[in-house]
Image (cartoon, rainbow, N blue to C red; front, side, top):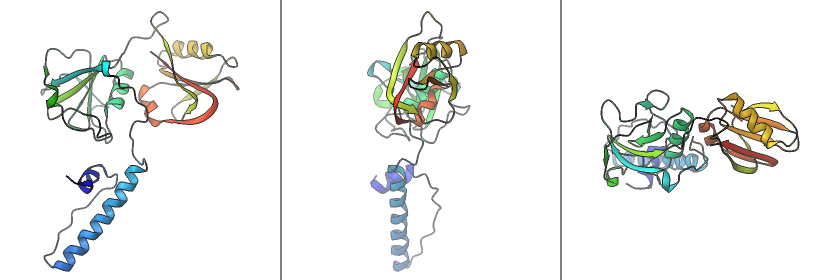
Length: 238
């Protein structure tokens, strides 16, 4: 597979089938036009016009291994129902499954994600999970009926088992799904307590200058990224 083949698979613009004529000039014309079109696709992908997850949560201790899947599914809950996402990779799958309350996340066949609380004894050789993720080809996303399985770190949130992790300092969330509330000026603890009371809250952003607190209900929304903002901090409940 060459550079064109690789980006052909990732291009965010649909390619239409062409019938190549036998005439030599026509063939070369179409070939050159196709190359130019794919080069445009390469630029679009490399400029970040995609839905690739913008936060890295993977750790070597999170990976459980490669597991055999089957028709009834080893991990029963599919990402948003059918399991598919056009830019799926392991960070997104882990964040989604953790947000849904599952202990394990598994990616399969480059662009599928499944969640569950029991992986049973269906492990196999890691070499069988060899397909690169459609959202990040440097990561492995299982194979045909093979799952790359990770622990999500999920724990039911309550005041006894909750810990607070600062994800970013002097940054704010770019997602439009955050909800803003006013708290006591500069109080990280106040925002954390507010987040905990809401129960659905997973992440919060606090401005030490204005006292504004914004809460996030889904871990996966972190994939939308961050922007530099002095005085802001982003925390995640673990």
